[in-house]
Amino acid sequence: MRLLVAEDDRKVASFLRQGLEEEGYAVEVARDGAAALDLILADPPFDLVILDVMMPRRDGFAVLKSVRERRIVAFHESGHAIVATVLPGLDPVHIYSELFGALPPINPGIVEKSTARPHPPAGPAGTGPPVSFSRSGLAVNWSPQYTSLLEFAEACDVPTRFSCRSGVCHTCVTQVIAGSTVYTQPPLEQPPDGTVLICVAEPGDGVVLDL
Ligand code: FES
Image (tube, rainbow, N blue to C red):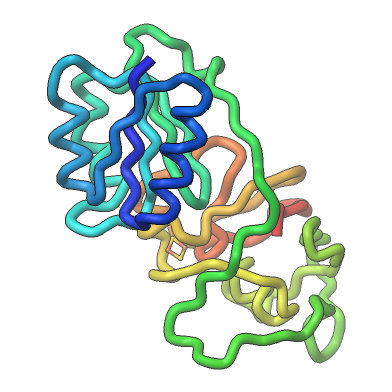
């Protein structure tokens, strides 16, 4: 089985390559999105592609968009990476995913990172739907004074990941463990089923987020 790892971080690429080769896979590595796209479109096709989301020259979403019409038929995407199969006819229900621990925060432009433990937001308690941050062990009620679940999480010092804050980059994509959310602004591209872009979403009747 031939695998392509598209990853610009040398250490991560090397770690993935070593682990996969030890399992008996033939692995090639692309260091940026453009190189990954060239390799994916060349013959013979790869059986599986692991795409980093943030890469130079083309991000993972741009690469995926360029090749989906041609041969990729199923993919899974998490906050960090996209796993895409190039086996024609494989049903997406046969793509499995697993979460590997808490993701480190991504907070561009914020120099001083908070070290506070997650806590209810300051001020009067909200009276809106319940919001649970499962990894942080915090359950609080939503308050409409916040414009998004991202902003609400920040007010609680729950570790967050964001970049554009406008539903474009998918950096803030978060697993919805239970409940529902409502978009206040439609994302440019929908995230995978079972996830939400918290920078442009509010809770529905209540939600449990993997944060
Ligand atoms: S931060 Fe970019 S989509 Fe939410």
